Image (cartoon, rainbow, N blue to C red; front, side, top):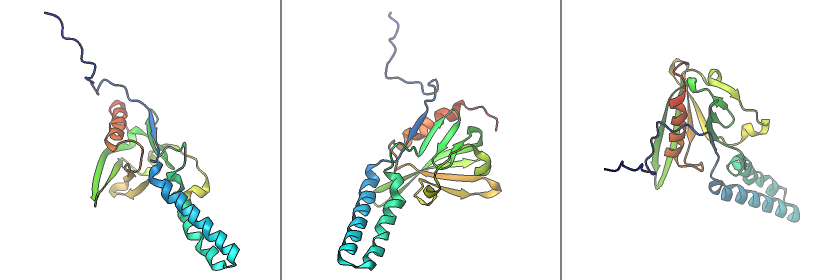
Length: 189
């Protein structure tokens, strides 16, 4: 008898080392909103100055404000979520230490024909105590859209809900990549 050849498609996920990753917004989801609002605002401003209607210039602030608010959805080179040995990275928070994460789970909600997918990160303690390396960002970015929401829970624990359906990678793949790091972390913390 010959030995059974190894199956090249068979993967043992427990033996694979975790691979650092960083993912951003799916730009196609925000381009029409950001660029369309920007064009509409510029048209309002142009007509306002050409026709001498100052009220139209004030009205232009609405679409320009919408474009500004949603700009992170089209911003290049800005990851929204990632992971490496330092921890779990969430944009505008920074790195959350692996020892500070109590649990991770994905929640799916169907709204008409759209599936909204959220990664819930339950922390062992408050967010401020969980961050190991804070991200620095410009002050004006504080008033732009975020891809996450913070929920204060009982006993001083916080939960962060990160929207995954707006990102470039499939939600289950994101969770698998994060869990690869979670499996290798020390059990202290």
